[in-house]
Image 1 (tube, rainbow, N blue to C red):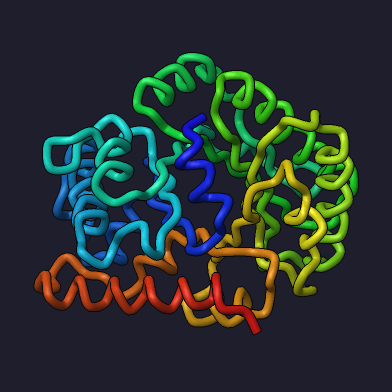
Image 2 (image 1 turned 45 degrees about the horizontal axis):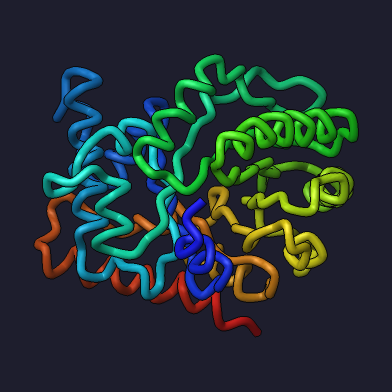
Length: 297
């Protein structure tokens, strides 16, 4: 674990950029960016276009470590270069942004009100490559759709089980048990999630280091006790389908979380914009999210 990178994240003075759209979500991300599916005819072309978009984001003068602590990357992004430099190396050496890798393989079918992660069958090999690329940590997402105690416990059990393997490989796991903002019993589901997370964190070894990425809760400060635990680095907030304005408004009310936004970060960016327009829009977005993460009410 790189101690300089650890200290940067522990400072909490900034937010995370989630640049980890996978094969399933890439067409939608490209569409929002102004690139229709008619522009590409294979998966390779699609990933080339999304990498070009991400390259434009991370090379922008608006994107650097003064406001952005970390960036979460898709596997193909990790394996590609930015301006001739491996992406993770570029992020840290040129921008002072700490790199993380999305490692989950998508969601299983819903059972007991939740969607567990599909098995990560290639985990050991993937963690080996993450270390080769000098990633600091990993991220994995599962989804809670309703307030079923058994389902929520299963979600958290799975996240911590994989998290132990990731920690043993020398990487810091970001555990992301997302509560759907459309859940009919969102506040109850969040209470169940809090209790399950608290029990697992309480049982961690003293030297353990983990991160959490969670939906902004209905009750501000719900996860403050988890964020205060020395084994938990800053708790990240996902935008979860909210617009950037909505997500920032909610986040600004919660002193225990900082942003880790994906679609909300990229909102308003377009392939057709000039570099001046693109950089100005990205700078405004980063400024808004930074303020919501750092300057609390």
